[in-house]
Amino acid sequence: MKLQRIKNVIISGIQINTYAIFEDRVYPIIEPTMFLAHMSQKNSKESVRAYGNDLLKFFRELSEVNGTSGILGQDFRDVTDNEMNVYLNAYLRRKHGLKLKSINRHIATLRSFYDFAYSYGWIAERKNFSFLVRTDEVKTSELEGISKQLTLEYMSKDDLKTLLESVPTNNFFNCKRDQLTLMLGYYANFRTHELVHPNNLRVRDLEELITLDERGIPSITKPMKIYGKGNKIRSVRVWPELIQPLYEFLKMAKRIGAKQLMCKQDSKPLTTQGHGTKVFRKAVITLQLKGELSADEAGLWKFRHYHGLRKCYATNAVTYCYKEGYDKRTFVTQWMGHSDYSTTEIYIYFEALLNHRTLINNEIDMNKMLKDYQLKDFAK
Image (cartoon, rainbow, N blue to C red; front, side):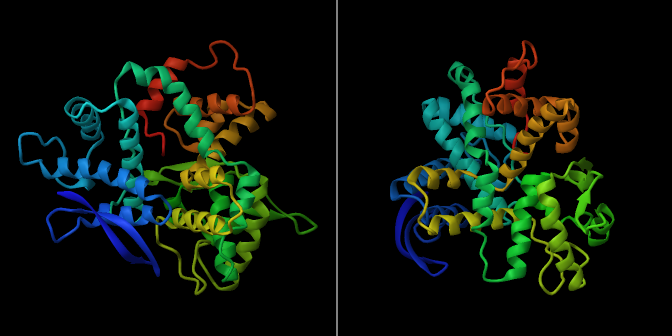
């Protein structure tokens, strides 16, 4: 198995140079090769080669499962969280002696690869590996790691406005739908697959949820019910900024006889679970093509993703609870559908950093929060 440079590949009508991982001299391994081609469209040759070398190590270990050194399942789709952590610690750390910095780069590569695999339908459910590397070096930097990750992912309302303005406008109906798709993540904490769940965003339910005053101005006074993972239902507070756009597109959906808000122009419901992810990425690509971003801003948008909109909701919900005098752990935990309040405490901590808020003594058990951050599927 080897990594090989290939030139003049045509992707979506664009000619690029990229890398491929070959299992033998003839046939490339499709999934990592497609991922590298995707990354080649927006990254330097050196960066893509680094991604390729990281994946080469990973897929070599997958292929060695029948030998004495294999520690992973043979198919990348079947790798468990425990196996991934064994790979990081036993294979990269001990066998190859990689430094923490290099292991963190591998983690970033693997996270991006599995997100890409999910968005293209190669795996049925998003992988939320904990990526635990048990070293003192990790422990001393964990708080900084939480802060850095959330700071990079956090989008202000101005950032959202910029993103909404970058949604392709060649089709008015699709443009308004896709703008609403992004707003549903930011203002109502929808996951991408929840947008197309048959029990969510039904036209008849939204008609009952939205009320009009004597001036015809829409409002939502009741929580919106969202069917999430395993059909678990959570009740979500909808931010006011979403109501008017939601009402306007609801009228468009009704005019074409649609039963679901997330629909095509022929009224048929959308079924692609990664719709939100694709809308977000297309908007980012359009934003980058405008040529108005600095190098740092362009790099920041590359890091962001649709699920980050939900994290923004959680952070902003903490601020709202401070303002209204609500209990943060109770309400944010409920709105987000967290299994317990320990995940919410991560957002309480970050909101305090973001808004220069001083947390009172013992308001958060930092050691417990760090442990929960490591062990929980924080991307959910």
